[in-house]
Image (cartoon, rainbow, N blue to C red; front, top):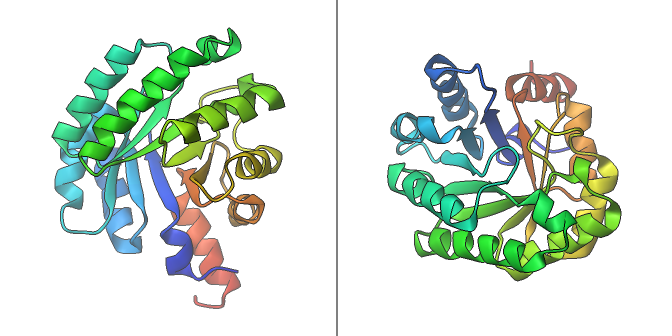
Length: 227
């Protein structure tokens, strides 16, 4: 079982619901600074305030590109990424063009990922490519993960949390098998308990996306006898 700091360092705390406000962002940043989590992931509009609140904390500002359906053109995704990086984001969670993948238009996926990755890496930022696995069969998941890894992504990520299905142990295991140790695997969507988190880590996840950070870490402290 991980220590609390070890698990906290794997968590991207999500503040992405349509109804969440700046107050939610402030509360998330307070939690993040206290627990020293990996990042706070916010909607692009809230990147400036998040970056300001997390300055010098060691917690990264993360945002989403092409969220939640991935249907924008590569050029629009690049524009969004450019603005986010300028505003202070250091991690970009980018949704692939799901329809293009299903159409087997792999060139579009390669191009959009490579463009965003090139831009991000020039700013020493990280890119996590969201596959939205709930819409895909296993062959499509594998192809998408291969393309993302080959195009320079730092992570492949299961889900937005707003699709038909969140992270599953089976999908995390599949993605880890496909990408090996070349890139990270982020599990996101439906991770609400410590057992959920531990199951994803056991399957190969190296990062977790959740809005239940406080509850998960509190349960870990209880199990470790630290409260």
